[in-house]
Amino acid sequence: MSTHQLHADHARLFEHNRFVYPVLSRRSGGISLGVNLNPDKICNFDCIYCQVDRRSQSETRFVETEALIKELRTTLEIVTSGAIYDTPKFQDVPPHLRRLNDIAFSGDGEPTTYKNFDELIEKCAAVKRDMESRLEVPQPPIKLVLITNASMFHRPHVQRGLKILDENNGEIWAKLDAGTDEYYHLIERTPIPFRQILDNITSAARNRPLVIQSIFMRVNGEPPSVAELEAFCDRLNEITSVGGQLKLVQIYTIARRPAESYVAPLSDAQVDDIVALVKQRTKLSAIAYYGSAAY
Ligand code: SF4
Image (cartoon, rainbow, N blue to C red):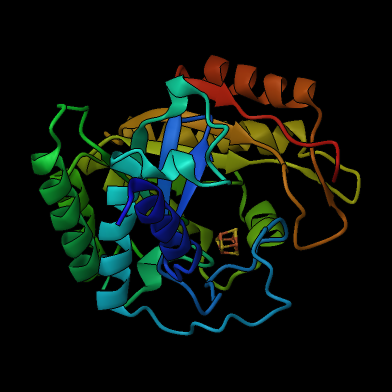
């Protein structure tokens, strides 16, 4: 098989993937492999800003472990061999972004609700270790990133999964979008109590540094009030005051079509103001990610 054929086959292979998706992440400065643990598109939150299109049903309802691991192995090979940059979708990636940054567990719902979460993380970590050991040119270790709403951290199998992440260059990005109970329920629309989320983030952050991911928006034209944002900073301070380690607070706004039409992005200046407030009131590192005027 010629190199060209091999590359063409690779392209077909990952285009038909059902669980593992390569994306260019300018933010992280490289390619991120998304692993979708919720192909059924079911989530225990119902965020008003969610970008998952739940109008169409997915054909894949369950995680098929063997198929997922095979996709991960193949897609890792396509990326690390450079074959991905011969495919139409990735051929224009500039040279400095042609590196694999991470494998990110996220998907079309909350990844930690997957019942075999710990086993799956271990299997993916083993694939990553194997790949790293076979790389001819030494590269920085690939990160394993968990993007989560923190609602399941109290479950033992999730705690085991988090520990496996810790041992494999893992990073946990925990969502916290509110400072008060009322605003939390307005945004996340879940029966899970706000206290549970705060307790879960606090206990996870006592065991390893977490990244906090927070999205703020206009709801029916109204940005979050100053009181809400100050309460948000207070919650962060409560976490750190009992030994929780927060290495970064990422402040986002809406960048893609949200679930509800009454949700709209903040301006860049409003996002900057929130970052400044967080830095000033918490002394934590905070960074802004801007929205898109299209929505
Ligand atoms: S937690 Fe994530 S996937 Fe679930 S509804 Fe919210 S934004 Fe969507």
